[in-house]
Length: 446
Ligand code: XUL
Ligand code: CO
Image 1 (cartoon, rainbow, N blue to C red):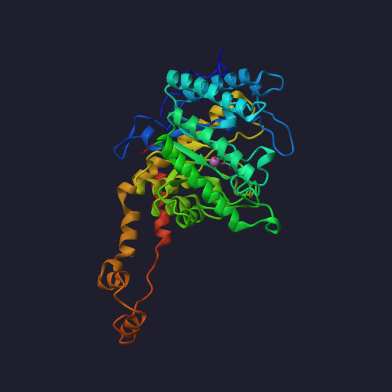
Image 2 (image 1 turned 135 degrees about the vertical axis):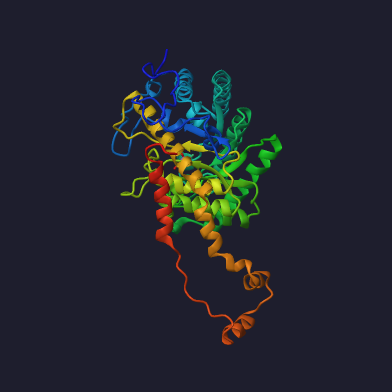
């Protein structure tokens, strides 16, 4: 029996002039953009946790959403299968190629770890059947090593090595599940890998533990022959006051320090970037430029508050700027756009989950078109090229090759041979270039 009986079996791509609520206006999986299908550019995924494992509760109030499988009293494995049936009905009606999950999203905890493991294995088997039937694939799997009270002081960074060991066991099983389901990536978000107060914390020892943990994860990936990409998801804080994987630059420094570059890449979440005081495209550009770009969680924050609201992306401008950097870096390899998005608590109609995702998917599709146009027209890149062209000349090359000293340069400046004048950065013109391209895209002229 369908959980979404009023929604058509698939969401058609009907263009901007359609009146249909359940239709894509811009997203068209087969449309070719820069020589590649739109679906293959975006690699869209729905997240299991906020969409199906969350009731709409917040710190001030109970769940509001219609999620009958979460009701108390249901047989846990039966409820997990019901939840999965609904999840796959949703994925296939929406027409996205991928989904993402945490271990505890798909399988209930047992009375002990061995039973929890059996539950997970059984639900992975059930997921395999759904994936075969629908063709929906796994973008990434992950483990929730932050929710249970045993992880209150961290998982890998816990002062107690037994908690480290417990997290290791849990993550091994989640990696096995991801491998078995052919996941394209495995994600590690260190929700409690940070501190609440420095007064009780040995920061360096905790980061050493985190590095040891990540090394074990990389070794296990190779041991089982998992070919997906390992991704670390940066976030500056929340739930902890300070999280060690603060932003892309911090993660990059960590990977470099502990000799893990090449093993881990980043899963950048739009609102984690803004919570870290960066723009989304700053984080993407940093990751691309430093060879650690992996995947995206596309959910945004609210500009008026400082917490993780996990809203559906709806700003074409914000997503275009990030998309431009992604395209400039050659696009996704194993990564994609995951919607780590929450409905608002008042969005309690079953259809709201569709509205949120449909709007978000069209926003990304439109951003792709605008970013592709910016790449094709080449103005931004040509301006950058020209701005740095001095570095291709004799002086720039000699400086970078290391053949000039401070004294050599001083000599040339004293002699008047070098006497630079200020040059405009042209920011306003470049912002106009982006806006003109955005405006041209309104009305479907792309
Ligand atoms: C939390 C967050 C997580 C990770 C997966 O802010 O983004 O949902 O994406 O654990
Ligand atoms: Co996320």
